Image 1 (cartoon, one colour):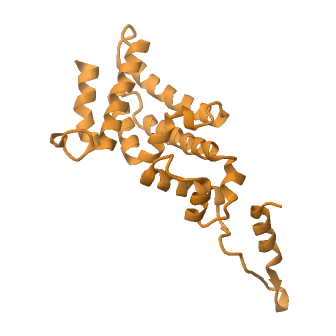
Image 2: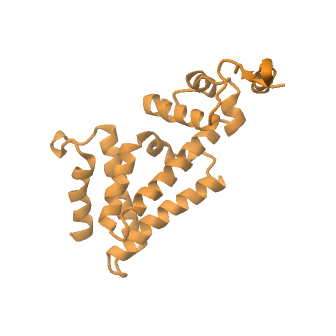
Image 3: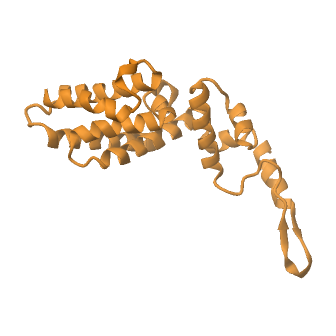
Length: 209
């Protein structure tokens, strides 16, 4: 029996029946009554923010989250599975953020930068396919949602003859590159302290020349 199963078993046998049929539940240390999967994901995001995706092990993450050392593997299989879940969540949030821009491609680019700078841990792992289970169906679906939102904005923003694959790549490269430079602290101080405000004129030059 795995240590995770032992933990759950101890939790079950710790149920004590009191007088008048009242049940008191004494949960073992480290057992979470809420969403254990969410707890582990949140801990992973925090660990990535602090030391990147390579700076910790599943066992270390379990200690951080206050769960049994077997819990992360139980829910995600391995570290790549956990990082895949973080990336999937990230693409889903990115798709939702892009959707707020509607048909305005400039605002879609701004939304891309806003998402990346607000969720740097997700952004850091989303495009590192070597760290992920790249063929995971949920990841593929989330990636597709985000890509479609970006392409729909481009299609409605520029003439059809300009909405080529090269144009999409250029637009994505500008927004993604700006966000990555901002997160790394590589941009000069003159751009100011607001990532979205700083990105807007750069993206305007791409779209409006």
